[in-house]
Image (tube, rainbow, N blue to C red):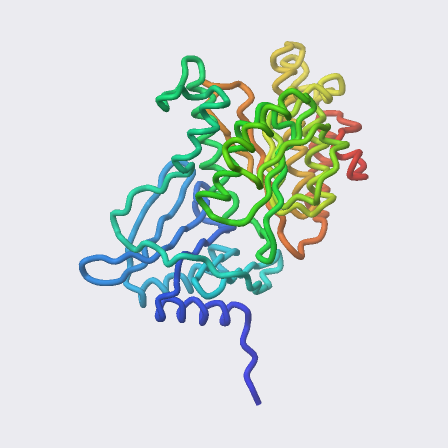
Length: 394
């Protein structure tokens, strides 16, 4: 009788084979469980040292990276101990096939097969840090007024230039864990894209850096900005980048795999999140702005009443409660969420970012529903835009 191989054993065999036959490109271990709360993930790639082939481990923390290099046999042994215990997600990329191992909340593993990556990885140990925007991004940066013809950042645009590159760096990490399609171009929508700075950056990251087939569409209510951005996309040779007029709620678009909405005012952020959830969008990235809706409802516990009589504290509590409810509602809807600082408050006060990654096969989480209701009850919240649109009742 043939023995049944578990998904975890299958994954381990595929990983070992890729290291042995030279097709291994990279491995990402995510969804850390327990241990150091600052640990985000481990990134593993092949390197060639003077002593021979090794696997380089980068332990990525919130504020620092720790790197160590191990011989293949020792590295595979360590990876085997980490998967399913400290890490509940493993994404293997090889030049022959992509393999994803995910553990659900019961600790049950599931294996998903995807496409290969190309070309063969650079295994030089002291390789230069890859550029997150290719050199030809300079053409649209110049036309959008961020840089001058000499490629220097214009006066007053330093914060915008920094924001563009920071967003691209964040996006490059987020897409590693997102279940994006392998059999067709990735559909990406930037809601309320304004002048399109980050829409152009997103296009160039996918198309010219990551070299992943993608169609990127910016949605903007102001027709003059849509016309400007479409002209620049055409003039700079970006046929897979387009802009359309419309609102977050009404724009007609294909179902997005990646949905971005940065600094959409008040409940417009909720409108964007709802579109993403309803389409099972793989990755939702929002940076909320002007969280006004809940402020009139705040009737927190008596212990907070003396503080909340001050307008500034009331405003900050309204922002906190709004975005905390959004993150919890996303978890209830089957997403894994991260909330973090987008860019320093030195550059913008609206610096919070919520990133939500769809976890295939995960149903709505009733434990998260309880957390939503408890938080809403503590602050006296009776209704909220995202909850209403999702049919969630407090």
